[in-house]
Image 1 (tube, rainbow, N blue to C red):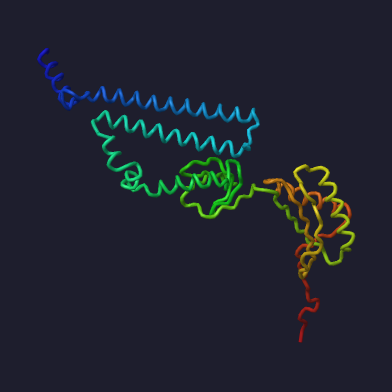
Image 2 (image 1 turned 135 degrees about the horizontal axis):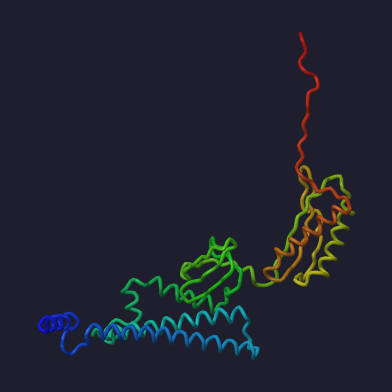
Length: 292
């Protein structure tokens, strides 16, 4: 029995130990587990430090808006995470006797990245820095990037995440971003077009619309300018088009448009104004074929 145990022990020593000077595999695995735990803990601590720092910024009323603050906080967290992961990987490689110092000295970090085919990663990171410092968009902005449109949920050095109106999450590498439409910068336009029957009195309709605009302006604080009745903007085959427009706070234009339509419909129903809609006229021949 004792002889068998000695044989097992000898086998394990041969299997887990490369030579007398190295750590055996179990010790290495324990050290790797400790390194990973430390990485996780350090990242958590640094994330907390970043959050606390930006909370103090809000209390001190430092000159960065909330959207920019969230964006910078997210970028810093990602940056710290990449640095800590890199240090952890180097530490793990050292455990296995890989000379990371000589690798970095001969190749350099940039050359190493290119060597591993990470040119696109470098491009993404550089583009992320440019987007951030040019203030093209921030977390919370409503943007259109290429064919994707939605609210920016997260912005990092490598990628941008936007949430579409249907709930889809689009993850876009920063290096692929060429054209950005930011719909949260500056005043936005609310535009409502109403089709009126030719039989209606345009002056009376305009007066009703102006009263609706005055009422809505007094009730909705998100309206910056207007609403204004532009007048007749088109004359179709069966109707006259009248347009109402307003300037609103960013992201409020759709709400103002909905309120305008609702109030206009209610006013037209009250004043018996006919809104144009497609009509079909059916002509029946009263003369049925008789006997010849």
